[in-house]
Length: 105
Image (tube, rainbow, N blue to C red):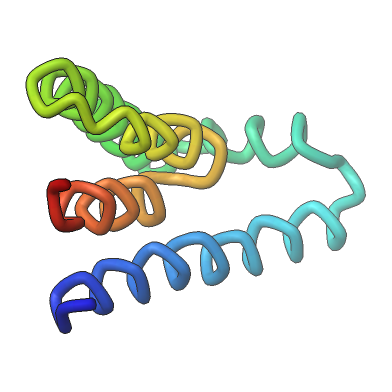
């Protein structure tokens, strides 16, 4: 595996674990669960702006993934879409880059 692919994989793992640490900590601290976490995304203009920024980035990444999957026929890369919306762009983007740079057979 190339060093670049290892970097992408490391970033995908970090992007899954690090933000989740804070999300789970917040939900545990407040006891509100996922609905409380989502409510917190809109508590003020700063968090709302960041939420929309990441949402738009996630949509753009999804469009890119779908467009490239149909051209490259790399169907495995589609798993980056649920990773993006279920975990975050910090996991979905490097995961997609990792899957996209695998050797074509």
